[in-house]
Image (cartoon, rainbow, N blue to C red; front, side):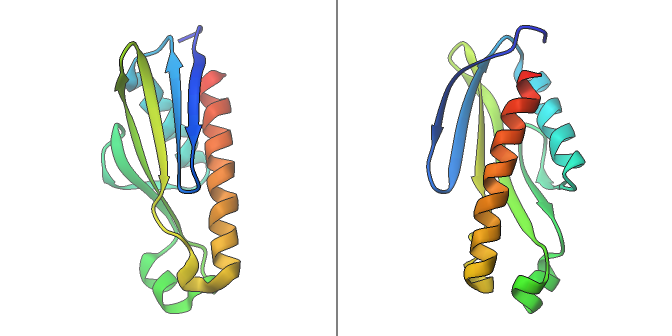
Length: 122
């Protein structure tokens, strides 16, 4: 996996798609899982190729809103032609906790996308 290169990306407000060459989906998924684990996320459902990573308590987040740290991302890793596509989508908007929570979710989304890109390429 020494020659991994990013060959394209597409971003929207709620998702980011990054395409890589030079590695298999399983190798990329392993890097994604490692990165997410280092940031404190755990795989809440699914598997490394298509799963939901979250951190914080969903129950406490629902009760206490912006006072509790809760983030969730849907991550899919799969073949797209000759490349491997990594799709990261926000699993929550943060609007239930008001403007502060929504801003935190947007910022964390950008940190995760940027960090994943860097980690996969390293």
